[in-house]
Image 1 (tube, helix red, strand yellow):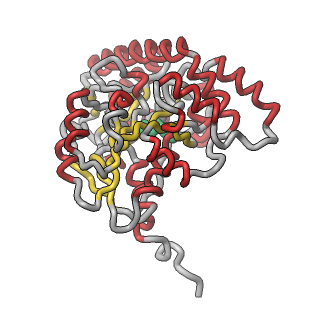
Image 2 (cartoon, protein in one colour):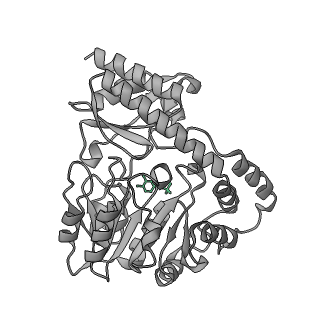
Length: 370
Ligand SMILES: *Cc1c(COP(=O)(O)O)cnc(C)c1O
């Protein structure tokens, strides 16, 4: 008799559901047998502008060294991040996407008997990395779809080692302000690592959102994770980073895979970081697109969760699954979020103006069918 390799997996893993990514364009094209050029994907919060030409050029230059291992210390990128954000290079940890950072944190600080606290409707990677190492997830109830920081504080117990917080949060787009963050950091036990996930901060900073980096000096238990996948337009390359105290960075560095960020990603990230105009344009495009979406949804008599990120969670007032399917048949890919406890919502990434229009037209058509 052969072993039951599901039952043999550790308990936390048995209870996991795999991460469900946005449906790739080619997959839908195969399924519906239609031209991929007729499909738009607003399902993974990708930058609709395409990568920065400067990043593309850096990648071409880096191709010559593809036979070599990448710089395992990511010297150049760490240096540039440190210059840009006013931290020491020994406070930077690079990741294969910021998801890698979240996983490294879990492997370094969580274990069976310990737990991580995060919010209802939070990013799906938090439960995955927590349960994968056999730790418990303590989920705090959300408030108006957003993080209820006092409830998260109350969920912390003596076995809590990590709190995962996204600001803005995905998939809700909700956010909290600087005072709420300060209060939270003041009250959280000093031996709990606060992971502030700022994947969308470039779309929101300067608005009512805190810049987590400003808190680093005062709170050695704070880690800020960021990514090149969203406003910097490099989702496919998988590169993200954490800024933290040097001690936490040292710990994470012990656990990470030695070459977790490849050389093309390193080169492109350096160039993207320098392309300030690209990020500024991404942000302008997103603000205009968000306005376009809100106007269009209002015209359809729909409501949504106000968002400071590059996506919007639309409330359909009924189960979203059939609307999602209807949109697919119109060649429009969005993201169902029932798995996040939001069965009546669909999450839609802000695209180019023409893509936003296509989505709104397709939605109107699908809803009219009833
Ligand atoms: C997209 C996203 C990330 C970034 O993931 P990468 O691994 O860097 O591509 C991290 N956190 C949240 C909340 C996200 O939505």
